Structures are given as C-alpha cells and as structure tokens.
Amino acid sequence: MSERQPIDAEPVEYDCEDVSVLVVGAGAAGARAAIELAQRGVDDVLVLGKRGHGDAHTTWARGGINGALGTHDPEDSPAIHAADTLNEGHFVNDPAKVETVTEQMPERLRELDEWGMAYSRTEDGEIDQRFFGAQSFRRTAFAGDHTGESMLNALVDRAQELSVPYRENVMITKLVSDGDAVHGAVGFDMDTGEFVLFNAGTVVLAAGGHAAIYNRHTSRDDENNGDGAALAYDAGASLMDMEFIQFHPTGMAVDEDDPEWEPWSGRLVTEAVRGEGGRLFNAEGERFMERYSPDQMELDARDVVARAIAQEVAEGRGTENGGVYLDISHRDAEFIEERLPRMYERFDDLGVDMAEEPVEVAPTSHYGMGGVAVDDHGETDVDGLFAIGETMAGVHGANRLGGNSLAETVAYGVVAGERIADRADGPGTVPDDLRESLVEPHFRELRAMANNDGEHDVGAVLADLRELMWEHAGILRDEASLREGLDRLAAVRDRATDLDVGPVTSETFEFAVDLGFMTVAAEAVLRGALEREESRGAHFRTDYPDVDGDWRRNVHFDAADVGGMRLRTEPVDEPSEAVQAALDEGHELDYHQLE
Ligand SMILES: Cc1cc2nc3c(=O)[nH]c(=O)nc-3n(C[C@H](O)[C@H](O)[C@H](O)COP(=O)(O)OP(=O)(O)OC[C@H]3O[C@@H](n4cnc5c(N)ncnc54)[C@H](O)[C@@H]3O)c2cc1C
Image (cartoon, rainbow, N blue to C red; front, side, top):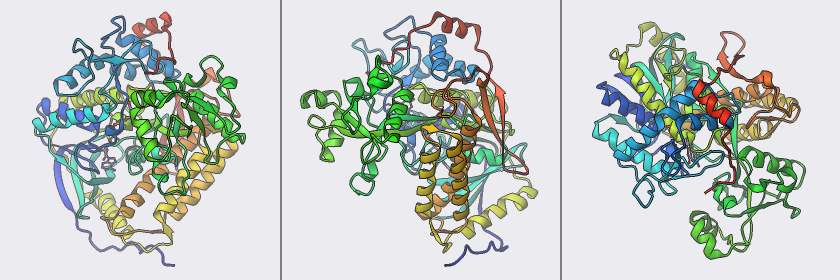
C-alpha cells in the first residue's frame, strides 16, 4: 500500500488566459447568459464546459418548458404561473426570483422560436402548450419529447451566429477568490492535461446541479455532481435550500449486478405511463396507493407517490430490486406503442414487453432545488461571482414545478447577462499574492493527486458516497439516520485522501475532483435536512411529519473560518400584490392532467 505523493514545492507550469467574463457551463443557462452578453456588446467572453459543445445535461430534458403564453388558455398569466410555483414550492421560494422567471417567460419562449427551436405546434402554427402536473393552465411548451435538446441546439446556433467563443473539455476545479471578490478560475484541459488559469473579472457559474450525489439518479453519472455549489461555497458564497431534493417517483429499479440492466438504474420512467393508466402494485400484489391517496391514486403529486413507494419498500413490501411494480399491461401493445413509444422500445430492448408484464420502478433523485444563494440579478455575496440555472437557489422552494427549471435557465441567463453588461469592466487580473497563496498551491495539489498510487478505488468511494446519501438523506429522513450519514460521510472523506488516480487526462482524475465537489454538496444536504425539523415539500422527516409555520425560512450554508460548515436561517419574503391576488383566487392545481 502506498500513500499519496507528498505535495512537492517544485514550480508548477500552467497556461494563462485573460477574459472579461468567464462562463463556467454551456448548458441552457450558460449559453443564454453568453448570448445576452454578446447581444449587449460585451466581447471577451469565454464559455467553457467539461464536455463537447452542445453536449450538456440540458439535452436530457424532455417534457417541456413553462411560460404563460396562453396558446390554449388565454386567462393564464405570469402572476398565476408564479402562484402555482409558490404553491408547489410550499412557500419557501423567493417570490421575487419566481416573478423574475414567470414575467420573462413568454418573451423567452418566443425568442427561442425565432432562433429555431423546433416547438411542437398547434394546427394554427402556434407554439403548442400542454398540461404538466400541478399547473392551473396549459403552459408547458415542448418539442416532442426532446425539448431540452431542441432548446440547446437553438441556443448554440444563436451563440455561434454571434461568434461567442467556446472551449470544450475544460474542467474548473477552483475559483480564484479572496472571499470578497472573484478574480478568475483555475482548472485543467481534459484532453491535454494542461493546467490553466483564467484571469476574469466576472465568473458566471452555470455548472448544473447536484442530483447525482445519490446512487439512484436520473442524470448522467458524470454530471450534476455539485460542481457549481462546491466551487461557490469554497469561494466564500452561501448555499441555500440544500435539504430539498426532488425524488421522481418512477425511476427504473434494476438488478445492479446485471451488466445489461445496471446502466439503466434510476433512469426515468415517464410520468406519462401513469398518465395513460399505469397502476402501482407492491410485491404482495396490492394496489397500495389506495391507502395513501384514495382519490388521486397514482396521479398524486410526485412527492406523495415517491413517499408511498419508499414506505412500501421500507416496510418490506418492495421487490428484490428495492422497488414496486408499474403495470400498464391492461392496455394492448398497439396503444402502448402509440402513446409511450420510447418507453415501450426501451423495455422491449431489455426483453420486457410492457403489454404483457409490469416493470419495476423506484423513486430516483431528479433535481436539487437548492444551490448557490444569489440576489435578484444572480450575483452571489462574492463580488463578480454569479450563479444561474440549476446551480442557483431560490426559484423552486421545497419542490420544483415540472417545466420550471428550463425556464429558470434562460430567464436568469438574461438577468445575469444584463447586470454584467451594465458594468463590464474588462479583463480581471489575479493579484500576485493570490497566485502564490491559492493558485499555485492548488495546482501542486492537483499534480500530487494525478498518478497517485493510493489505497482506495475512486469509483468505489464514489459509490459509497452515493449509497450513504440514499440510505441517510433519501425520501424518509430522521435525526438518528442523518447523524449516521454524517459519520459515514466523514469516513468517505478520510478515504478520499488516499485514492488510486490516473493521469490528469484520465477518468479517475475527473472523478476524484468530482468526489471533492460531491462531499460538499452531500454535507450540506445532510446538515440542512437535520436542521429543518419539519416536513415540507420534498423534505420529509418521519420524526417531524408535519409542516411547521415557523419554518417558513431558508437554511443558508456558509464556510466558517474555523469549524467547517455553518448554518443559519433567514425568513422568506412576501409575494407581490399581483401574485398574492392570484394565490387568493385559488386556481385549481390538478394533478390528473398529465399529458
Ligand atoms: C431526465 C431529466 C429530464 C428533465 N426534464 C425536464 C423538463 O422536461 N423540463 C424542465 O424544465 N427541466 C427538466 N429537467 C431539468 C433540466 O434539464 C435542468 O435543470 C437544466 O437543463 C439545467 O441546465 P443548466 O444550464 O443549469 O445546467 P446543465 O445543462 O447541467 O449544464 C451544466 C454545464 O456545466 C458544465 N460543467 C459542470 N461542471 C463543470 C466544471 N467543474 N467545469 C467546467 N464545466 C462544468 C457542463 O459540462 C455543462 O456544460 C430534466 C432533468 C433530467 C435529468
């Protein structure tokens, strides 16, 4: 057994690039921010991502994007959209941020249309809109079942038209910050292994979320690991609402030892299967939703169905793979093939005919409502550091309304872009003392991690982390288990100091960096869940099963100089008069309208 190489003091070589605005992340949020900057004449912007151009997690979004266009329901409005969002967020969303998104969305949807997004259309050629769970009107625009891909294509085309520079396959590992202001970021080129310092007066984190810190998740394994949250936290910004994780009720529950099935673990089984009549049964053949939600049954809200499944599994009525059965075999093959073509094909390829037998499903981590705390323009407490899209917190509260995260990406891309353009002040410079005290020591640490012949396999430690999050900060939470989770996290951190890592260009190196980000996000989720002694939205404490009015507050997480992560709470603001009026009108939230 060998230990990690000591960090040597030899000078470390790195490239330097000067830009005025560095956008970390090229999903919908990063692309839209860069477009806004270019349209407002800010040149010298660089967008980078750790994958190829156009290849971001955004492409996985299928169902749609919200905006009160009123194609079918002219009585819809941004204020009612905001009211629905606050309702679903159980009133811990930031009302001002919610309104920023809902006010902008009609225009944002139309502009995407102009830029070539391939929307599904009505017979009259209008942008079609459909119902989505918990929305009062049909306001979810979509492009077949590939909304995210179509949206990102349109944004990438527009960014290219404006000649926005983009750098592929660069991973940012640390921000250069003195705690008060950001001066740039550092990372490595994943193809060449070169270290790079970006001098930048403004940094926009659009690096996605943290839902993949759980072992059963709907994201790609190598994304949504909390990079944005951890980078901001390390730079001196606050995180917020990290305890709120949306678990989608129906991910694929598979035999993880079977190589054919394992890659499908947690992948979404669309809500539409239940919308088309799919029924849930436990391993004893009981249609258990009768006990949890006799009126809405399988079509109740995501958190209600997810909790019911988790309860069945916890009480020993689950399948061998830790799930329940979803059965639509009372419909014939023709119907299923026509209405659920992708699902039918996917299971058919795996040897399961949905028209003949049920499929196994279990809740799966889908979205982290929390993230980086920002002001109304997307700026953090650290001057010049912005966080937008899934990286930011505030819009979704305790539970996200389906279709609102794509909306947030473009809305906040514009808001942050406007703000930055108003005060664009040229390329930043990393002060010499920060180069010596922060940048170069960090590169030396990375160099020591590369080719480290340590005791622990990176993949195994990552798997342990994801498993502990599932077991201790999953759907049903309680104090004892959360505390145990924190102890297990400490053990994971300990093992992470002695990893077996390949060269800088290897996958193990990327995953070792991810592990560092994931432990920050995981700690915040565990601590936040322990702190919030009530149940609200997606956060359910079996030892505090009720909503507590005094907890209409947001939990913030700050890095303390001494003693690690510090938590504090802040009260939530009141909605505007227009939104309060929409709330008072009491529009019906209908969970049955899944299309
Ligand atoms: C299966 C699935 C279906 C969904 N369906 C919908 C839907 O129908 N409607 C909806 O509104 N939402 C949906 N969502 C959520 C939505 O897709 C995301 O919230 C949204 O796309 C996030 O966009 P983003 O631009 O913030 O981040 P992302 O698209 O995740 O982009 C992040 C970018 O950051 C880069 N990056 C990350 N870390 C680093 C780093 N350290 N260094 C450099 N670059 C980095 C990545 O390479 C990428 O370019 C769905 C999510 C999933 C998983």
